[in-house]
Image (cartoon, rainbow, N blue to C red; front, side, top):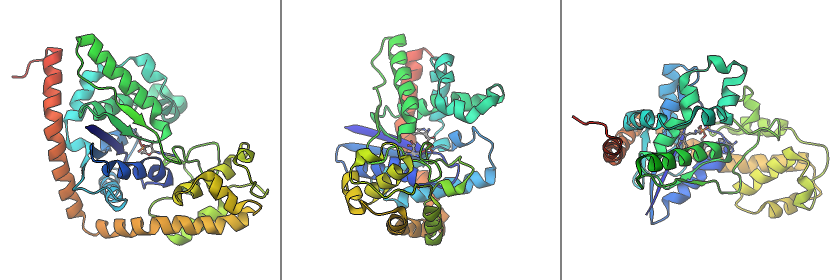
Length: 334
Ligand code: TYM
């Protein structure tokens, strides 16, 4: 039996990168017979950067709504909020005693987010990957579907799991397998084909959000950075054209065809011909999700109910694992 766990931060709206890099793959796992899926909204990770508590609460519900609207079925998967299952943070402390500072310092996400002021960064931002390891290991998850940017964090989680097993001479934590698949594991910014599409990019024009309306999507795609050349016949001819490659990759991912086939459709055409068709495809793909999300957000009580029962189920799985970790580590439970 596979146990799948993944999560997203409720820092702001989800974008095309979150959807194609992760969420779409989560939905497919749910259909596998031998897979038990847990999907959480990682609010404790979102507070490692400055935030507004009121906005966080709403964003947490919105992310849960986005999961459901994208096809995560609460009857098939356990959907919950990370902070509602305190075992995550309890395990984090224990794992923190085994996580090496040197390795944490090498995490690129920490370096990016802390910027030049690393001395002033909070401990939470530094320890972020240890909490992520705890999210995974508290359920003894075997598979973690994520986008490519989370690869380094996953490696650390695997490292912590084996350090624990070696340190205490047990075979307790499995090695969680990163699942970085799908046609678009690294979606790039619409403004710069060499940097990833990200919630933290100050320019909203750099990403397409799940909640953008048709006009906004059209405008963002029209303004997306491209070059003046026509689209070539061969994919290898896009090697030095990162923006063009990104748009073709996205077109292919959304239309469920290969990049080669998508390129064939447009070969010889310019971006002014490609862009309206691409925009139409994005609008068509997102409209049912956005409509569903809007409907769900009109009844936040129902979302809360789903999250509460998800948290109960998750806690039933997490509590015995934490108890066993205590026993292995020689901690008393009075
Ligand atoms: P977060 O919230 O930044 O992103 C959520 C998911 O979206 C993927 N993603 C992308 N995929 C492709 N292209 C992009 N441009 C892009 N941007 C984001 C991310 O890889 C991720 O899968 N640390 C995690 C959240 C987390 C987690 C966990 C994940 C906390 N605990 C345990 C898995 C298991 C994060 O910041 O994701």
